[in-house]
Length: 256
Image (cartoon, rainbow, N blue to C red; front, side, top):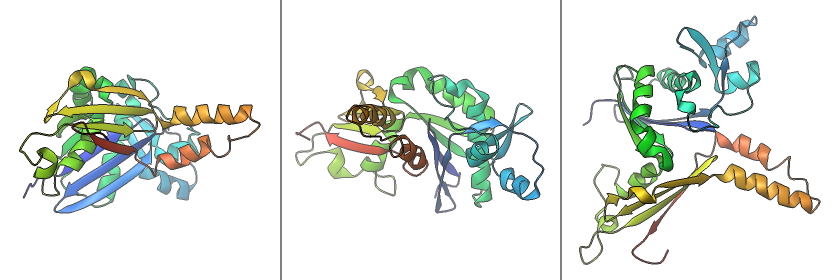
């Protein structure tokens, strides 16, 4: 049995999605990617409620998640640029995720193995730097960065015990299969090609996610006299912390 606590950490542009494996148990966590500088609170109940979602980065305290939304008025995700992981807000979200896991009773978080994700198009450029930044928040952790659609691929390709599913690796004649991944996210949609088990760099791309599509749909409906403002953007904001994304895999050895 693998003794080190493993944490899959997707600090997304709309929500932070976390899966942890510790002592044979799996833990799931989700909260909005909202961050703001903390303020002094006077109400005792508010102070208690905010404590779990408050972290310190370089001597400054930050509210995260719903506390940032309610107490700090944060309404927009911090991750709206490709270099947002260079900000203190990214470190605050990483620390907040670990603090919440500790509150859930996850052990071994002093020296965990952390897997973080990057958009497919930025993987080659951001991988090493993202690992370095994540270690800044968690200096005793082992950190590995992966392209985000690789998570969907591995979830499909590997059995629960971590062994490849043979039928998905080779066909009936023993030839290695190739797979394409389409990972539809809130702000980005990522593409990945695994050709005969090899990651093909030039086919790793990203484009806008479902949020832009919903905005465009709202504009089209508006020209037809239909007001979708109450159901489309608001619904996406509410759903951002509930829906981690949609991933689909296609075999490229046969028509999808």
